[in-house]
Image 1 (spheres, rainbow, N blue to C red):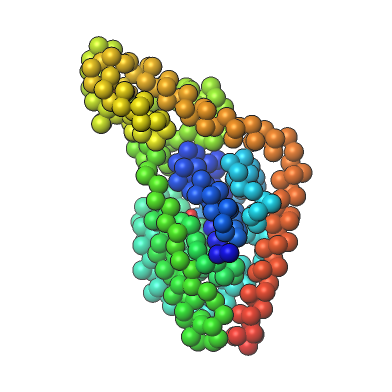
Image 2 (cartoon, rainbow, N blue to C red):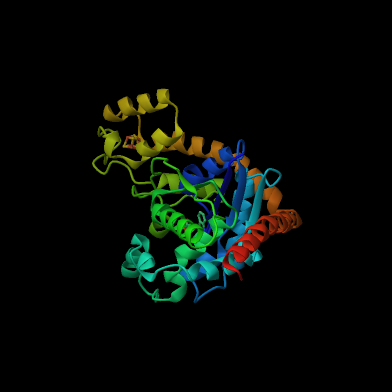
Length: 325
Ligand code: TRP
Ligand code: SF4
């Protein structure tokens, strides 16, 4: 079985975009891959090192979101990065063979340096972010890493580091391939891409009234002011979400009835809210179970820690042996 590994930073509750983009893919991979999924808490520190007061909450929330959507600890190893110190050791060893220009030319480094305001990101930790990510991946000899487009430069650097290590010492490390999660972007309540930084998200953990309220206030075709005005679904974010959530008969019907003003926005939104609530209901149910049983979540991360540590220790021993350390 091919081995798959992926991680997410604990930076708040997950939303529908995260769910449809990454998690449904992770969930499906469990069927025919050996999977490792981890909470990248050290990575979160690289940009949020000043205020760490919510870190433990975020880690917990993320784990519960994962378990609730069906990441299955019976089949996958679910763990927390900082529970496995081998990540830090391999990060250090890899940093010795990482040329600084490789890191400086990383597009996401440059982009965040320029665009993230209010934080000083000229830190060693932030520059070395991709080295830590490479350590995460190489430690488990992952064959494939499910990621979004934005992560491709990090994957490339991981491959370059593996090659460099293997040619300097002995071929111990496995070059991973990226498994692109190419889900079309999920639209947020304001019509832009659903994203935490825009404040336009619907969270997996939002209760039903909150979901329905958010849907009610969702932006529509701005030209459709009165109920009798015909609308244009092509410019309407609600319609974009219908394309994600509704079946083709409903989509066709709305496409037609919006243009003739046969359907009103309130009803149109309600059809959509019903679909979303339907999809989220089993997740809410599962969330409640895990929230009511924190010991179960602890058990998952403890056994994840044990099993991840074992694999990691094995690779780290080979790495040290290769480096004569
Ligand atoms: N950088 C990833 C992100 O921000 C998170 C991450 C850390 C990761 N280590 C990883 C993803 C290893 C895949 C593999 O989304
Ligand atoms: Fe958008 Fe639906 Fe209103 Fe048409 S009817 S403008 S698709 S919300």
